[in-house]
Amino acid sequence: MTNLRSVELKAFVPARDFAASLAFYRALGFAVNWEDGNLAYLHHDQCSFLLQNFYVRELAENLMLHLLVEDVDSWWSQLQADGFFDRHPVAQGLQDQPWSMRDFVLLDPSGVLWRIGQNLD
Image (tube, rainbow, N blue to C red; front, side):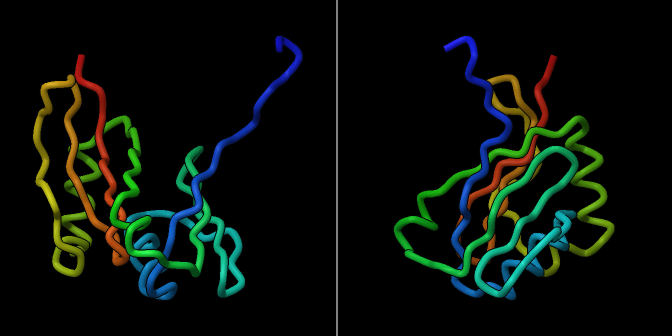
């Protein structure tokens, strides 16, 4: 398999309310490169995913995504300054984890869990 190369892996993230989810991800800092009302391509730097206008509660509430960032404290501070947490409650505040990561946890409008964190030295 040495000749096989991969380019990218994207998750399809469900949305119970497509417009509310788009607003959440834009507020989080993701750019929407393309959308047609049923599917949207979102990215931040080299990270991307597809938001779909499709919802199954069991899927959404069991989907967890992890965004690895360089400086999680700056992400936390920027979201605080932008009033993001006033509109979107934090599931778990910023803290050091026993698995050598500093992170915080958000739930999107559909119940998808996001861990945003950085590796600790």
